[in-house]
Amino acid sequence: MTTPSIRRPDWLQSPAERGVDDLRIAGRSVMERWEQPYMDELAAIVTANAGDILEVGYGMGISTSAVQAAEPASHTILECHPDVARRCVDDHGDAMRTGRLRLLTGFWQDTAPLLREGLFDGILFDTYPLDEAEWDGPHLLFFEEARRLLKPGGVLTYYSDEPHEIEGAHRGALLAAGFRDEDIEWDVVRVEPPPACEYWDHQTIVAPRVRKSR
Image 1 (spheres, helix red, strand yellow):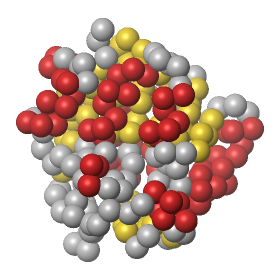
Image 2 (tube, rainbow, N blue to C red):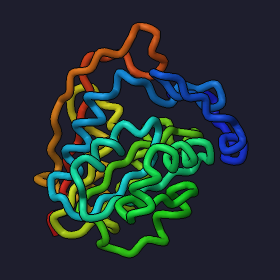
Image 3 (cartoon, rainbow, N blue to C red):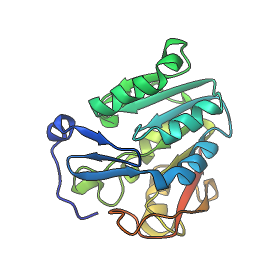
């Protein structure tokens, strides 16, 4: 990721431009429709235990719809961008009114620490990197908080920025957060990004399955 950093207030004040097949904020391509099979796989991983699900980042709502279709015991979404949060309300207002979905607004760094330890059976993390600290993947900074929030036996999955495997510094960050080698598994999902895609140029992408075993 080589795009310049953007201040959080500027990100929040930039309109979210959502087309049929993409989402752009502050001139940046945040998400595109080609991710559908990948998002469906992440949703399948995170709902494998049913139970209580946390989803960090709403984006175009692709994974949210798949999670809702699995009818988890509870579904909490953290979303920072006001336009994207409003779209979540528009898309899933009925689920919110019946208590099947809860939306918390704000950056995960501010909202996730307010959630109780060991609350979730599954966590799906997919946010956009805003500054240099996140350019290697914002998920790397979330691993410790994810482990705190997971119940024993709970599973973490996320947009991995990896085409083939989880090794090297990526695996090291999971281990440093307290996950064990035997906790780390993944699937490789085939995708078809268009040639003009600004952020992914591979035909595969890793869907992690990282379990909290203790």
